Image 1 (cartoon, one colour):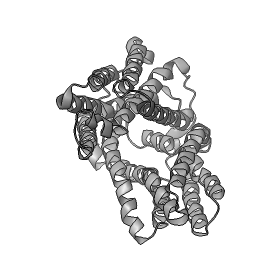
Image 2 (cartoon, rainbow, N blue to C red):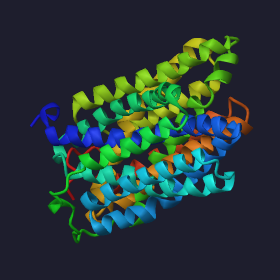
Image 3 (tube, rainbow, N blue to C red):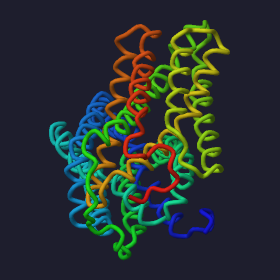
Image 4 (cartoon, one colour):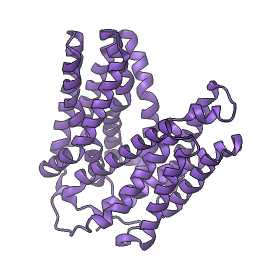
Length: 378
């Protein structure tokens, strides 16, 4: 069956994009909400920080809970709980609740949402066949770029109707995503007795996920200083993000067209070369080329990492395992952002280069025979 005529996949895709939408809307939505209700945009930043910390803290424990109850039952419950959390937060803000109350209330949607990505990724394994999985993940990566861009734009549009409307829309998106989760068909997600490869088998792929977050944040957080280093005006900063996103979409499209897992060491090598060029300050050609190489390797590396992790994870641990990988990637993004803020600009990309080199070295031995396989069946 072709992926483009795979109705179950597109239902899954609609659900996961709706589930991701609130996270992309949250930074601007929280800022606009607190500015309108308390007069402080800083409180919105603190709310977002608490939300992210809650997501990371709850990702693995809540993922284990999903594994225990089953993804087709656990995901709708978590999505509805997240929707309730956003709704309660909006109501409290409209009632002029104290700042401490708002900070406490944002914990509920944060903790509940922490395992959504891992749960949906587990559901994908039960939605498409193994031979379609690399292409399915690549297409999803392209759609994710649209959600990342569309989320803030949607907040700006909805805010015209009131500062509470974006939060209501975030709650509604979670409810719609819950409706799209199938209620049956959990036969493939039952516990199996496949032996776990141990921490050593997972570690290289977690390092790949960490590297993606670490090096991407170096670009996404620093477009302004990157162009200012070349003597360009501030208005040139969006060019960096456009090149990064465009290259990422193109790389994912080519990877989807090829339809094979590929060797992640090739993409890690692209990260090393791109990061070195980014640190080297070779003018506009060097900046554009380095960002394009990193963007082009991002989607394929994410897909290869995801496919190989699925091969290694026992079915009764997939939600927790995928949630851990997303958390590790988020940690990499946070540390990369911190590096941009406290280190010289030329030095920040070298941490991503080092991480990519370490991940590549870990994969030299081809752990569990996973690299480059087209089948992910254990």
